[in-house]
Length: 148
Image (cartoon, rainbow, N blue to C red; front, side, top):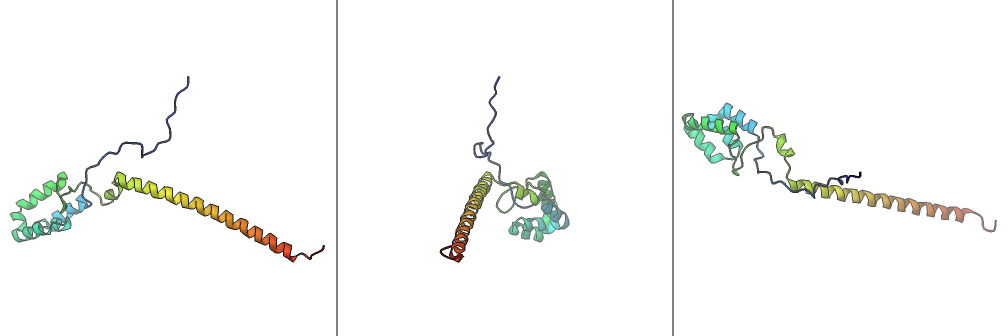
């Protein structure tokens, strides 16, 4: 009974899953800024929404109602930044880990190119070593007295 073993995994063969875009801003930072200076719109300035941040400063967070609404949306993950992307990541480091499929493909291509460069450098080093040995042999022949 013979079984076909699966081949080597190639991420380029797999179907690309389109992940929803999320903001690079941290939800936890926005929440802390909202709790500390929410009625003054600190969290809105953080996400790049300066106009509404100024409006919050002038109205003291809509007398607290606007601020309360923002706190609920931040905790729920529905608060949006200036690019209208939701703040979903609690940690700033999560945005680095959430690399798109296109970026992964670029990293793989760069890795392959670096491996090719390493191979070429290895071959070049072998050729230089061979040429040095030939030159050394030629010098040794020239040093020997002629006619011996």
